[in-house]
Length: 212
Length: 201
Image (cartoon, rainbow over all chains, first blue to last red; front, side, top):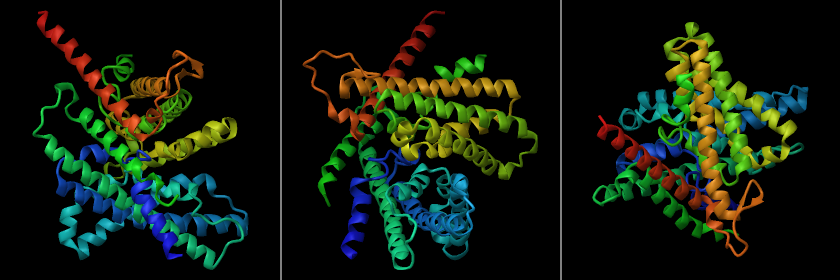
């Protein structure tokens, strides 16, 4: 059981890395990967919000929408995306308020990144992929099965956040070195960053055998 | 009209402004997917620009992003249901990337930069131009990747028979690599054009 959960975590970090495999969250990936400490701050903020958002959307999607549909025949499925976006925006807002009140030091560090995270597609993507991966409830599962699925979804969220942090920190480290090298003029900036990302993605493909 | 042309090449959202690149890389493994994605995004962009432009008098500054997102989410849901009903295969292939149009930066950026400030017609022109520019960029990338990965273009064989497919172009690294090189070439062409302009008085 524990091994299976660890496998989900590891897979989300290394193999199904949100940036290098699913192409999610590329805007901050290209935008804030100039300095390692900034990248780390962004990565931590994303991991934090992603974990909270993944668990909240799982609860909304599986407990509220699912039971309304099963118990009362009210199908709110068509509102799912709107609700997800609301939950994410709300989470970001809550996290911001919480940090400002209780961890002002952390707030100063995350401050500028937090509003950006609302429109970070890695977060919404993670919440949507939980569905695709089959970590959601299907009819007839309750109790233990539900908490087991929830644990899977939660670890998938954490893993995705850590994967994002890993990818953006690696990229920031490379880009700090890249400042000293002689890149062809037209490829400076976005061009060379994407090509470096290609090489990183190729390296990450090497992990794809883990866990079969 | 000027706005329409502006979006297609001079300010191409993908190649010049580097916006909305997440779906750009994810769906360009073949051309059909790229065209569907481009048209879906164009539709959402068109409708959301229309609504934002009509509602701009009622927008409160601190709530505007939230309102944009809700409008966009509504139209994305429509597109998603349409694809599920009429193009099931395509919907399966694109998967969660269709709902991800909600957080596509192009659409929010156009609502913010253009539709919330201008009248109905200019913002519709802007939406069409930007949308087609997005579709065009997707098609360029998808063509390169599909030709190199499968030797086909829209399922027609274009390469010679003994051509070895470059499987890597279909995977993630190929996407990053193609996009990086296309951005570089685009910068190069622009620089040449500008140099020529400035050398002729």
